[in-house]
Amino acid sequence: MQEILRIAVQKSGRLYEGSMKLLKECGIEISNGNNQLRVTAANFPVEVFFLRDDDIPEYVQDAVADIGFVGENVVTESNKQTDSIEKLGFGKCRLSIAVPKNGNMQTVSDLEGKKIATSYPFILSNFLEERNITASIHEISGSVEIAPKIGLADAICDLVSSGSTLFTNELKEIETILSSEAVLISNKELSVNKKIILESLLFRIRSVKKARNNKYVLLNAPNDKLDTICSLLPGMKSPTILPLAESGWSSVHSVISESDFWNVIEKLKAAGAQGILIIPIEKMIV
Ligand code: PRT
Ligand code: ZN
Image (cartoon, rainbow, N blue to C red; front, side):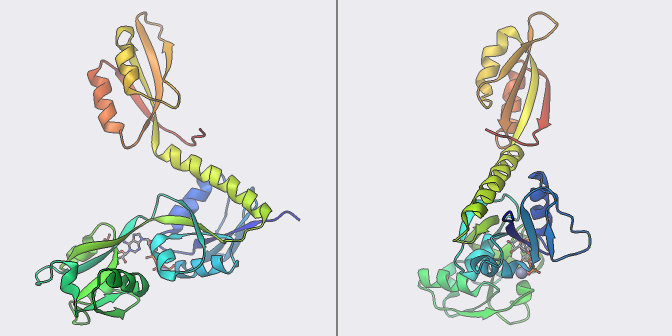
């Protein structure tokens, strides 16, 4: 019987959609229609387990699952023995210390002797130790942001993404302890066959990530401007140039990264490019 790679994914919550979307874009068909806990893919040798995110590092460590998609915050806090293989580009957030906006604490050193509420006692205690700060940690599992208001703590250490929860609770961030996103973690002792399946999955994941970070650009350019325009477009090798039916004009095709996008488009226009089309890329194999 062919071996199968068991992937642990959050059952419901902030990482569920990103995880399922990534598997789908990797061409892996999973139907979780009946809210099952375990589903085998139709067209790739993987089985997906749906779990609470906090349990994923331990299950991967103990080889109940072979790999997992989970937040770096959970991986670090759980302190289990797994390998972090690949960042997945979703579930981005940061673990920060926040204090009452109108209070007199301004920096981390003001936490000395104070009480801090958090769901991340392990990460927080390491951080405080590194900074030589003695503070008491009050562990709570949810609604950490209300702790200062109800007198449970002087400060909090919690995840932040947009910052609106802190804003609503009249708190301000004074320090980021950890930046986090979803990562692929792996059991440390996968069999040879499971490693082969993982390599094939990673190849697909990396192609999807590259495609998400790049756009295909098509434009028309007068031939006497081609040199300038091509110098703005690195492409995967170099831009493709095809003659247009109208003499003296060419069509230029290339790939540009999402981060350079607006900057490059403005320069292309200024250099004489016309009819610029930007097209999403589905997969990118380099
Ligand atoms: O049931 P289960 O245990 O599986 O889920 P959960 O409730 O523990 O986790 P869930 O679904 O809330 O989050 C899963 C993972 O998503 C986290 O471990 C992070 O890796 C990631 N993530 C990304 C976030 C956030 N962004 C986030 N903003 N997790 C939580 N939050 C919370 C935060 O705790 C705070 O209450 O959102 C609030 C702040 O958000 P902003 O936008 O107001 O700043
Ligand atoms: Zn959780």
